[in-house]
Amino acid sequence: MSPTDEDCERGRLEAAWESFECPDGLVAQCFGGAIVMEVHPRTLHDLPIRTMVRQAWPRLEAWGECGLDCGADGKPRADVVFARPDDIDLAWEDWPAGAVQGVCEVISPSSKNHDRRIKAEIYARARIPVYLIVDPTQGLWEIFTLGPADAYQLVGKGGFGEPCELPLPAGAVVVDTTAWRPYSST
Image 1: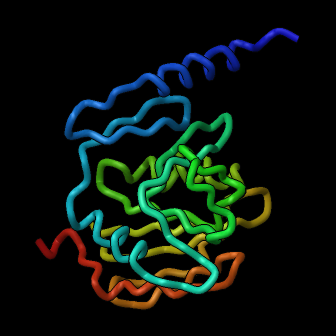
Image 2: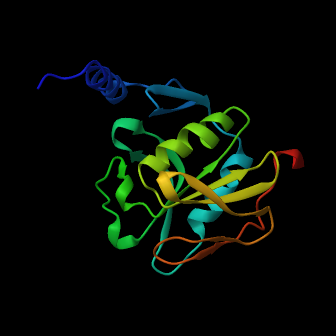
């Protein structure tokens, strides 16, 4: 069986990604058939990530800035990945999507389309059960769970300062959002 044009293109993209050197001041990800570069996020963007990673829950850990192996859809870099400690292999360069309980993306005006549409579709196809979107522009968070036909459904939303209960497969956890600040607070 000979490789398809799509297989060849995916192979070229993977090879380019493996040798890619990101310019200073930018962050890069490989997903949706492209290498995507963005300006390094602001401190307020990183605040929700930092608070989630520092919270302690039984049976679960939160890790920041993890690459995910989503197969043919590429290797997006999630702002936060939730996983059971026993499912984590410290040798991973990119986490297999099957080991992930949930992901979080903190959206910026420049990444809104990627996070709300493209990454949501990729994470859903990879069957990641829970997707949390944090929007510092609006001061809001939204929780999505995987529903029929591998599509996310909105199951909860709230504002910064309100507890955010994530219904992860290993058990629900409450994310403390009291330290989060909207962009407009600067």
